[in-house]
Length: 319
Picture: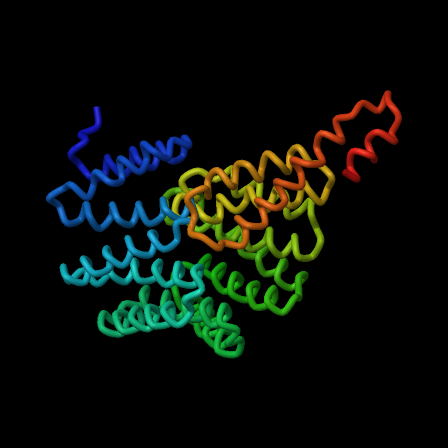
Protein backbone atom coordinates (compact mmCIF):
# COMPACT_ATOMS: atom_id res chain seq x y z
CA UNK A 1 0.00 0.00 0.00
CA UNK A 2 1.45 3.35 -1.01
CA UNK A 3 1.80 5.97 1.71
CA UNK A 4 -0.33 8.90 0.43
CA UNK A 5 1.57 11.30 2.70
CA UNK A 6 4.73 10.91 0.61
CA UNK A 7 4.72 13.38 -2.23
CA UNK A 8 6.58 11.02 -4.55
CA UNK A 9 3.63 8.65 -4.32
CA UNK A 10 1.15 11.43 -5.02
CA UNK A 11 3.04 12.39 -8.16
CA UNK A 12 3.30 8.76 -9.24
CA UNK A 13 -0.44 8.27 -8.77
CA UNK A 14 -1.10 11.46 -10.71
CA UNK A 15 1.08 10.18 -13.54
CA UNK A 16 -0.78 6.87 -13.59
CA UNK A 17 -4.18 8.54 -13.71
CA UNK A 18 -3.00 10.87 -16.47
CA UNK A 19 -1.75 7.96 -18.57
CA UNK A 20 -5.09 6.23 -18.01
CA UNK A 21 -6.91 9.32 -19.27
CA UNK A 22 -8.47 10.14 -15.90
CA UNK A 23 -7.43 13.79 -15.93
CA UNK A 24 -9.66 14.86 -13.05
CA UNK A 25 -8.07 12.38 -10.65
CA UNK A 26 -4.60 13.17 -11.99
CA UNK A 27 -4.97 16.87 -11.19
CA UNK A 28 -6.32 16.06 -7.73
CA UNK A 29 -3.26 13.96 -6.92
CA UNK A 30 -0.85 16.61 -8.18
CA UNK A 31 -2.68 19.33 -6.23
CA UNK A 32 -2.33 17.32 -3.00
CA UNK A 33 1.43 17.86 -3.11
CA UNK A 34 0.84 21.55 -2.46
CA UNK A 35 -0.75 20.66 0.91
CA UNK A 36 2.49 19.07 2.13
CA UNK A 37 4.80 20.66 4.67
CA UNK A 38 7.79 19.58 2.59
CA UNK A 39 9.13 22.26 0.29
CA UNK A 40 10.33 19.60 -2.13
CA UNK A 41 6.72 18.49 -2.53
CA UNK A 42 5.80 21.96 -3.74
CA UNK A 43 8.72 22.06 -6.15
CA UNK A 44 7.94 18.80 -7.89
CA UNK A 45 4.19 19.09 -7.49
CA UNK A 46 4.23 22.37 -9.41
CA UNK A 47 6.50 20.83 -12.02
CA UNK A 48 3.98 18.03 -12.53
CA UNK A 49 1.09 20.47 -12.66
CA UNK A 50 2.92 22.54 -15.24
CA UNK A 51 3.33 19.49 -17.46
CA UNK A 52 -0.27 18.47 -16.84
CA UNK A 53 -1.59 21.85 -17.98
CA UNK A 54 0.40 21.57 -21.21
CA UNK A 55 -1.63 18.48 -22.07
CA UNK A 56 -4.75 20.65 -22.02
CA UNK A 57 -3.34 23.65 -23.85
CA UNK A 58 -3.38 25.70 -20.64
CA UNK A 59 -0.01 27.24 -21.44
CA UNK A 60 -0.29 30.31 -19.25
CA UNK A 61 -1.17 28.23 -16.19
CA UNK A 62 1.70 25.91 -17.04
CA UNK A 63 4.11 28.84 -17.05
CA UNK A 64 2.71 30.18 -13.77
CA UNK A 65 3.38 26.89 -12.01
CA UNK A 66 6.99 26.88 -13.17
CA UNK A 67 7.47 30.53 -12.25
CA UNK A 68 6.39 29.73 -8.69
CA UNK A 69 8.53 26.60 -8.57
CA UNK A 70 11.56 28.51 -9.83
CA UNK A 71 11.07 31.25 -7.24
CA UNK A 72 10.85 28.67 -4.45
CA UNK A 73 13.97 26.87 -5.66
CA UNK A 74 15.82 30.19 -5.71
CA UNK A 75 14.62 30.98 -2.19
CA UNK A 76 15.89 27.59 -1.03
CA UNK A 77 19.24 28.15 -2.71
CA UNK A 78 18.78 25.06 -4.86
CA UNK A 79 20.52 26.25 -8.02
CA UNK A 80 20.37 22.89 -9.78
CA UNK A 81 16.60 22.65 -9.44
CA UNK A 82 16.13 26.34 -10.27
CA UNK A 83 18.21 25.83 -13.41
CA UNK A 84 16.02 22.92 -14.54
CA UNK A 85 12.78 24.81 -13.95
CA UNK A 86 14.04 27.89 -15.79
CA UNK A 87 15.00 25.77 -18.82
CA UNK A 88 11.53 24.30 -18.98
CA UNK A 89 9.94 27.71 -18.40
CA UNK A 90 11.85 29.25 -21.30
CA UNK A 91 10.49 26.57 -23.62
CA UNK A 92 6.93 27.38 -22.55
CA UNK A 93 7.48 31.09 -23.14
CA UNK A 94 8.45 30.14 -26.70
CA UNK A 95 5.17 28.22 -27.08
CA UNK A 96 3.22 31.29 -25.92
CA UNK A 97 5.03 33.57 -28.37
CA UNK A 98 7.00 35.41 -25.67
CA UNK A 99 10.41 35.16 -27.30
CA UNK A 100 12.00 38.04 -25.38
CA UNK A 101 10.83 36.61 -22.07
CA UNK A 102 12.23 33.24 -23.14
CA UNK A 103 15.55 34.91 -23.91
CA UNK A 104 15.68 36.63 -20.52
CA UNK A 105 14.98 33.31 -18.83
CA UNK A 106 17.67 31.62 -20.91
CA UNK A 107 20.19 34.27 -19.85
CA UNK A 108 19.30 33.56 -16.23
CA UNK A 109 20.19 29.89 -16.76
CA UNK A 110 23.47 31.08 -18.27
CA UNK A 111 24.25 33.08 -15.13
CA UNK A 112 23.54 30.05 -12.94
CA UNK A 113 25.76 27.85 -15.12
CA UNK A 114 28.57 30.40 -14.84
CA UNK A 115 28.19 30.58 -11.06
CA UNK A 116 28.20 26.84 -10.52
CA UNK A 117 30.78 26.15 -13.26
CA UNK A 118 28.87 22.95 -13.94
CA UNK A 119 29.78 21.40 -17.28
CA UNK A 120 26.32 19.83 -17.53
CA UNK A 121 24.62 23.17 -16.99
CA UNK A 122 26.95 25.04 -19.37
CA UNK A 123 26.30 22.40 -22.02
CA UNK A 124 22.53 22.68 -21.53
CA UNK A 125 22.70 26.46 -21.73
CA UNK A 126 24.56 26.36 -25.06
CA UNK A 127 22.10 23.82 -26.46
CA UNK A 128 19.09 25.86 -25.32
CA UNK A 129 20.65 28.96 -26.86
CA UNK A 130 20.98 27.17 -30.20
CA UNK A 131 17.33 26.08 -30.06
CA UNK A 132 16.01 29.50 -29.07
CA UNK A 133 18.08 31.39 -31.62
CA UNK A 134 16.61 29.18 -34.35
CA UNK A 135 13.10 29.87 -33.03
CA UNK A 136 13.88 33.61 -33.17
CA UNK A 137 15.28 33.27 -36.71
CA UNK A 138 18.78 34.22 -35.54
CA UNK A 139 20.19 31.45 -37.71
CA UNK A 140 23.90 32.23 -37.63
CA UNK A 141 23.84 32.51 -33.84
CA UNK A 142 21.99 29.23 -33.72
CA UNK A 143 24.59 27.52 -35.91
CA UNK A 144 27.45 28.91 -33.83
CA UNK A 145 25.87 27.71 -30.59
CA UNK A 146 25.13 24.32 -32.14
CA UNK A 147 28.76 23.94 -33.22
CA UNK A 148 29.96 24.94 -29.74
CA UNK A 149 27.61 22.34 -28.27
CA UNK A 150 28.93 19.77 -30.76
CA UNK A 151 32.49 20.38 -29.58
CA UNK A 152 31.43 20.03 -25.95
CA UNK A 153 29.80 16.68 -26.65
CA UNK A 154 32.83 15.37 -28.52
CA UNK A 155 34.88 16.08 -25.41
CA UNK A 156 32.41 14.43 -23.02
CA UNK A 157 31.67 10.87 -21.97
CA UNK A 158 28.11 10.61 -23.31
CA UNK A 159 28.55 10.72 -27.06
CA UNK A 160 24.89 9.85 -27.61
CA UNK A 161 24.01 13.41 -26.66
CA UNK A 162 25.09 14.31 -30.17
CA UNK A 163 21.40 13.74 -30.93
CA UNK A 164 20.71 17.23 -29.60
CA UNK A 165 23.07 18.69 -32.18
CA UNK A 166 21.20 16.87 -34.93
CA UNK A 167 17.91 18.10 -33.48
CA UNK A 168 19.05 21.74 -33.70
CA UNK A 169 20.50 21.30 -37.18
CA UNK A 170 17.29 19.60 -38.26
CA UNK A 171 15.32 22.56 -36.96
CA UNK A 172 17.51 24.95 -38.93
CA UNK A 173 17.06 22.94 -42.12
CA UNK A 174 13.31 22.65 -41.57
CA UNK A 175 13.01 26.39 -41.01
CA UNK A 176 14.68 26.90 -44.39
CA UNK A 177 12.34 24.39 -46.07
CA UNK A 178 15.15 21.93 -46.71
CA UNK A 179 12.97 18.96 -45.81
CA UNK A 180 15.36 16.23 -46.88
CA UNK A 181 18.16 17.79 -44.83
CA UNK A 182 15.92 18.12 -41.79
CA UNK A 183 14.72 14.52 -42.09
CA UNK A 184 18.30 13.28 -42.37
CA UNK A 185 19.32 15.02 -39.15
CA UNK A 186 16.25 13.88 -37.21
CA UNK A 187 16.66 10.29 -38.39
CA UNK A 188 20.27 10.32 -37.21
CA UNK A 189 19.10 11.48 -33.77
CA UNK A 190 16.31 8.97 -33.11
CA UNK A 191 18.44 5.82 -32.61
CA UNK A 192 20.41 7.68 -29.93
CA UNK A 193 17.36 8.22 -27.72
CA UNK A 194 17.40 6.17 -24.50
CA UNK A 195 14.65 3.80 -23.49
CA UNK A 196 11.74 5.53 -21.77
CA UNK A 197 12.64 5.80 -18.10
CA UNK A 198 11.62 9.26 -16.84
CA UNK A 199 8.90 11.86 -17.28
CA UNK A 200 11.35 14.36 -18.79
CA UNK A 201 12.49 12.01 -21.57
CA UNK A 202 12.34 13.88 -24.86
CA UNK A 203 11.11 11.21 -27.29
CA UNK A 204 7.96 13.20 -28.13
CA UNK A 205 10.05 16.25 -29.04
CA UNK A 206 12.16 14.29 -31.55
CA UNK A 207 9.24 12.30 -33.01
CA UNK A 208 7.25 15.50 -33.47
CA UNK A 209 10.10 17.22 -35.30
CA UNK A 210 10.49 14.33 -37.73
CA UNK A 211 6.74 14.07 -38.23
CA UNK A 212 6.54 17.77 -39.04
CA UNK A 213 9.35 17.50 -41.59
CA UNK A 214 7.64 14.56 -43.30
CA UNK A 215 4.29 16.36 -43.29
CA UNK A 216 5.69 19.56 -44.77
CA UNK A 217 7.45 17.48 -47.42
CA UNK A 218 4.08 15.95 -48.38
CA UNK A 219 5.07 12.51 -47.07
CA UNK A 220 1.79 11.77 -45.32
CA UNK A 221 2.36 8.09 -44.58
CA UNK A 222 5.73 8.75 -42.96
CA UNK A 223 4.30 11.66 -40.96
CA UNK A 224 1.38 9.50 -39.83
CA UNK A 225 3.77 6.85 -38.49
CA UNK A 226 5.69 9.37 -36.40
CA UNK A 227 2.55 10.93 -34.94
CA UNK A 228 1.27 7.45 -34.09
CA UNK A 229 4.61 6.76 -32.40
CA UNK A 230 4.01 9.79 -30.19
CA UNK A 231 0.70 8.30 -29.13
CA UNK A 232 2.39 5.01 -28.26
CA UNK A 233 4.63 6.72 -25.70
CA UNK A 234 3.95 6.27 -22.01
CA UNK A 235 6.06 8.02 -19.38
CA UNK A 236 8.12 9.84 -22.01
CA UNK A 237 5.13 11.93 -23.11
CA UNK A 238 4.16 13.33 -19.72
CA UNK A 239 6.32 16.46 -19.89
CA UNK A 240 5.40 17.05 -23.53
CA UNK A 241 1.64 16.78 -23.19
CA UNK A 242 0.96 19.51 -25.74
CA UNK A 243 2.88 17.54 -28.37
CA UNK A 244 0.92 14.41 -27.45
CA UNK A 245 -2.41 16.27 -27.68
CA UNK A 246 -1.51 17.95 -30.97
CA UNK A 247 -0.60 14.58 -32.50
CA UNK A 248 -4.37 13.94 -32.62
CA UNK A 249 -4.84 17.21 -34.47
CA UNK A 250 -2.16 16.36 -37.02
CA UNK A 251 -3.46 12.85 -37.52
CA UNK A 252 -6.88 14.38 -38.12
CA UNK A 253 -5.42 16.58 -40.85
CA UNK A 254 -3.55 13.68 -42.43
CA UNK A 255 -6.60 11.40 -42.55
CA UNK A 256 -8.70 14.30 -43.83
CA UNK A 257 -6.24 14.77 -46.71
CA UNK A 258 -6.33 11.04 -47.38
CA UNK A 259 -10.12 11.11 -47.65
CA UNK A 260 -10.58 9.03 -44.50
CA UNK A 261 -13.15 11.40 -43.10
CA UNK A 262 -14.60 9.42 -40.20
CA UNK A 263 -11.12 8.67 -38.84
CA UNK A 264 -10.20 12.34 -39.24
CA UNK A 265 -13.34 13.38 -37.37
CA UNK A 266 -12.54 11.05 -34.47
CA UNK A 267 -9.03 12.48 -34.15
CA UNK A 268 -10.28 16.07 -34.19
CA UNK A 269 -12.83 15.22 -31.51
CA UNK A 270 -10.13 13.70 -29.30
CA UNK A 271 -7.87 16.71 -29.76
CA UNK A 272 -10.63 19.20 -28.99
CA UNK A 273 -11.64 17.21 -25.93
CA UNK A 274 -8.09 17.42 -24.55
CA UNK A 275 -7.88 21.15 -25.40
CA UNK A 276 -11.42 22.06 -24.33
CA UNK A 277 -10.04 24.34 -21.59
CA UNK A 278 -7.10 25.60 -23.65
CA UNK A 279 -5.92 29.20 -23.74
CA UNK A 280 -7.98 31.23 -26.22
CA UNK A 281 -6.65 31.90 -29.70
CA UNK A 282 -4.61 28.75 -30.26
CA UNK A 283 -4.57 28.27 -34.06
CA UNK A 284 -4.81 24.47 -33.90
CA UNK A 285 -8.02 24.67 -31.88
CA UNK A 286 -9.67 27.12 -34.27
CA UNK A 287 -8.60 25.08 -37.31
CA UNK A 288 -9.73 21.79 -35.77
CA UNK A 289 -13.18 23.25 -35.04
CA UNK A 290 -13.57 24.44 -38.63
CA UNK A 291 -12.45 21.11 -40.04
CA UNK A 292 -14.71 19.19 -37.67
CA UNK A 293 -17.70 21.29 -38.72
CA UNK A 294 -16.92 20.58 -42.36
CA UNK A 295 -16.54 16.85 -41.76
CA UNK A 296 -19.76 16.72 -39.75
CA UNK A 297 -21.57 18.32 -42.67
CA UNK A 298 -20.25 16.04 -45.41
CA UNK A 299 -20.04 12.65 -43.67
CA UNK A 300 -23.79 11.90 -43.98
CA UNK A 301 -23.43 12.34 -47.74
CA UNK A 302 -20.77 9.63 -47.91
CA UNK A 303 -23.06 7.28 -46.02
CA UNK A 304 -25.60 7.35 -48.83
CA UNK A 305 -25.78 3.85 -50.25
CA UNK A 306 -24.10 3.39 -53.61
CA UNK A 307 -27.04 1.19 -54.55
CA UNK A 308 -28.91 4.41 -55.06
CA UNK A 309 -28.07 6.92 -57.75
CA UNK A 310 -24.77 8.69 -57.15
CA UNK A 311 -26.65 11.86 -58.06
CA UNK A 312 -28.15 11.74 -54.56
CA UNK A 313 -24.68 11.79 -53.02
CA UNK A 314 -23.41 14.77 -55.01
CA UNK A 315 -26.64 16.66 -54.47
CA UNK A 316 -26.08 16.19 -50.76
CA UNK A 317 -22.49 17.47 -51.00
CA UNK A 318 -23.62 20.63 -52.84
CA UNK A 319 -26.09 21.58 -50.14
